Each structure stands twice: as C-alpha cells, then as structure tokens.
Length: 113
Image (cartoon, one colour):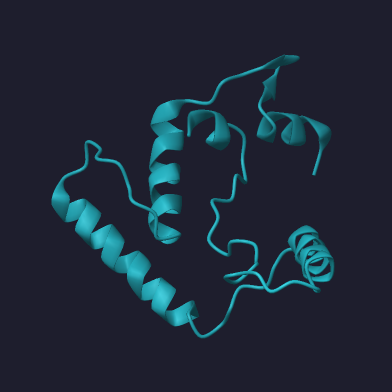
C-alpha cells in the first residue's frame, strides 16, 4: 500500500483533512447498524428496500450465529484485565465487553455518526 493511498483512506487530500461525502457514508452507517442489530433511523429509502436489506442481513447473521465472534487482541487483553481485577467479587451480572459494536473502519464514519 503506497503512502498516498493510506493518506486518502485516513481523510487527507493535498495535505489537509477532508470531510467525507455524507451521501456515501450514511448508507454504510445504516447497514452497519442493521448488521449489529441496532435500531436504524428513518431514511429516504422505501420500506421495500429496508425490508429486503434487513432480510438479507438477518440471513447472514443466522449463518454466522454458530460461530461466535472472537474478541480483537486489545479487547481480549481488556477482558482479561477485568476478569483478574474483579475475580474476588461476585458482580450482579455478566462482566464482559460488548460483542455488538459498530466498527469504524474508514474515515468519516464516527464523525458522521
């Protein structure tokens, strides 16, 4: 991966930070929210589009339900720390990091959200 491509993915063009086009980012955010089971705000798409998209995501989720998502290395270290730190007490519920999370995997997702 060359340096220019990396800078563009991080949101830099011509040496300055560039805000992403919301018309490209909002559909990605909606799909990510649907995929993680979060409530999706209303948008300009018709109910048929949302129903078909939700049905497709539900089918994909069913296929992968049997395969639990492993924690990323950082989350695994945090979970290990929490387990060791609170080992001598009985918490009222399960003390674990959330497994459903929105992954901000390209520039502009967090800012737009």
